[in-house]
Amino acid sequence: MFIDHAKIFVRAGNGGHGACSFRREKFVPQGGPDGGDGGGGGNVIVKASPRVTTLLDLKYRRHYEAAPGRPGEKANRHGRSGSDVTITVPVGTIIKDAGTQDLLADMVAPDQSAVVALGGKGGKGNARFATSTNRAPRQVEDGTPGAELWLDLELKLLADVGLVGRPNAGKSTLISTLSAARPEIAAYPFTTLRPHLGVVSIGAYNHFVMADVPGLIEGAHHGKGLGHQFLKHIQRTRFLLYLIDVSDWMTEDPVGTFQVLQEELVAFDPTLGERSFAVLGTKTDVQGDGRRLRELHRHCRDRGLAFFPISSVTGEGVDAVLAFLARRLQEIRAA
Ligand SMILES: Nc1nc2c(ncn2[C@@H]2O[C@H](COP(=O)(O)OP(=O)(O)OP(=O)(O)O)[C@@H](O)[C@H]2O)c(=O)[nH]1
Ligand SMILES: [Mg+2]
Image (cartoon, rainbow, N blue to C red):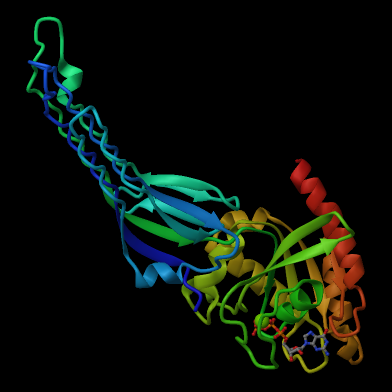
């Protein structure tokens, strides 16, 4: 199951108390104070892993607690620190304080980690309070409490290229011909029920990440179909590909379809209207008399929009799209 939101409770360990103790050894009368410091409490740490793709685990386990520091001991022995607890999340997870909604961390890179609840400090033992005038202090310090709070975690995928299209437009088919991603593919709408990421290689050294997002229909930004819930996963893509079916068994007009998709994106997030994009006319191997392809091509050409006819089945046009994406992404990264 793909889960992209979770609320969890985290508690860091308390610091251990400082010890109050005096040296008691044979033949050493009036040994000085030797109470050690308490250990620090464990932290709660969040770490991003590319091997995790959903927040599902956090739905099942909602409480995370790090170990407390041990109290100090006699003979100046410091208490052991409490061990940290680490929560693994997918890359792209945004972590907020659920109470204040303050942003605590945005886990954008693999292996990035952040302390979300800091362990308490260990208290000083009485040995640390000895002075020339007070050689037998009984004073000790308590450890401080570890932080505790509720966290909101939200996964917003990070990808270079986002695929946008109506159900059945051929998004999943395209990503599975270009990458190792294997989303479900079938001739019915809403086949793909969760976003998928695929790594697309261009040549030996260059690659980019593509996101297949479930199909969008008119009203998606109001929650129609599946769109609304997944639109946020294209918010953090650098480049969009609009996939428009131009096959002869498609009934609607391709230009209207493209415009509805654009409107849905802008209604959801106006900045998506400024995102660079290209338009793909898909399934050209079954384009029939080619009328739909011509209409869409003309519409794009008149507006100076990048347009490519492709077929994921025969491979027609796919290399041209790849070469174009490689160039555009390089420009975007450089900018
Ligand atoms: N002939 C032909 N069929 C294609 C092509 N691309 C996809 N299809 C078919 O179109 C249907 C829908 O393809 P999908 O890739 O599942 O479409 P999608 O956009 O991912 O659909 P949703 O997941 O429902 O949003 C499947 O039956 C595919 O086999 C193509 O280039 N040529
Ligand atoms: Mg699909």
